[in-house]
Image 1: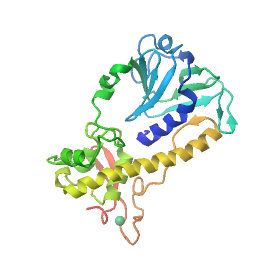
Image 2: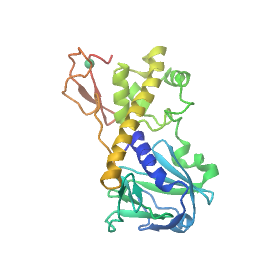
Image 3: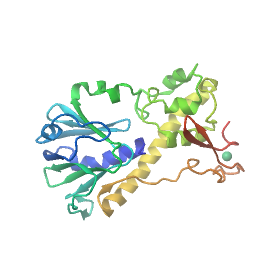
Image 4: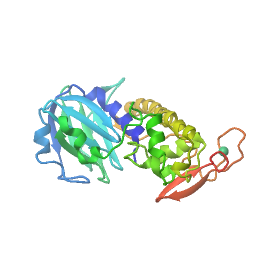
Length: 283
Ligand SMILES: [Zn+2]
């Protein structure tokens, strides 16, 4: 499941190919993904210019000259493939149409962007740009973790009096948008906070410390995505997903990476999701 840094990496990969370009033809090969596509999607996209490509939480939004915005959600397995454009030193010819190529954009300048999604948990929708924030998928979202609205006083206030575990609180998309299981595990490890602590039990200093750590963990992953992006673009034009090395996530039974710590990373299940933590570093 792509998290915010992966989506941001895909957005950055698409930006030079899509922004400012006219969609010469949009081809929509099926009526739906996770949900039905909007009516006449291909016609509404064809002939529009992509004026900006932005991200909100785990969604990519393409603002179009038609006054509409295209919302793209990669879902579990959605991938964006770029062909026909020079990417760095490489030029990728258009591949033969493949199974699961659900939406294909042919762009001014010769680039093609193909949305391929084997499991079809992805989604696309069109809405007026002016009221995009009111879209049902976006209106429920809290502030962006890398934005100015998300700051220490906001988080301290929102965690106070909250009786859920801190892990669950940070996964709540109303509280902060786009934080997923992997990065919350990493944040709590860096903060030295046990994932089962009640949010309300955090001191003001502990709660405040989470804000710069959240930004740091996400920024590190986006930086790692940027370097993998260069590799992907050079490899085959597939803006796929990249593997990180995590400090606790997925490391059950391995030694804690904190210098001098003799702890062994443990896993517990909270709300159906695995939490990884060091029982010595995280209290
Ligand atoms: Zn440790």
